[in-house]
Length: 167
Image 1: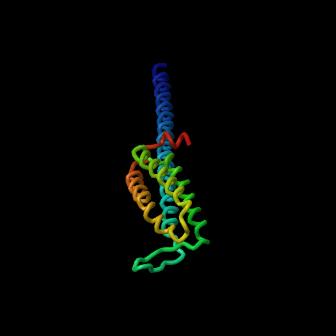
Image 2: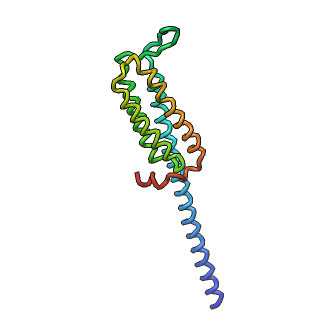
Image 3: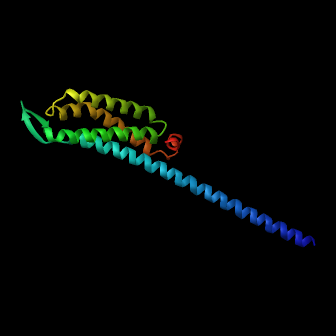
């Protein structure tokens, strides 16, 4: 009878060990998937912000020479497209405040606020002045964005999870 109990206890311990291993494996896989999801969402937010800032900064209808200087010009028909790109950049900056790592959050928030202010300041600018003013005012925002992306995307993807869960 003692051998039967020992066999039963052994089988029970084996089953508990297998169940615990299975649960641990599922939890580790879920954690890995979550980390990958955070990293992918962060990458998409940075990509979108950079893409639309670059589109707005580099849209030109023509380039002319004035007083020995090269001047970029946006025709009136392209102003709307430029503002659409700027609004997309604003959207992606706001998405970044939810997706970026904790170490980059304050810089991204400040850059997003600066972008909002710079876009608001364009209300009285004529189409012919827009490329030069955009280039001067938004290049710093783009520099900050790329620095934050470089730091954030080399991160392991765990920072900022609390904000992503809440969004």
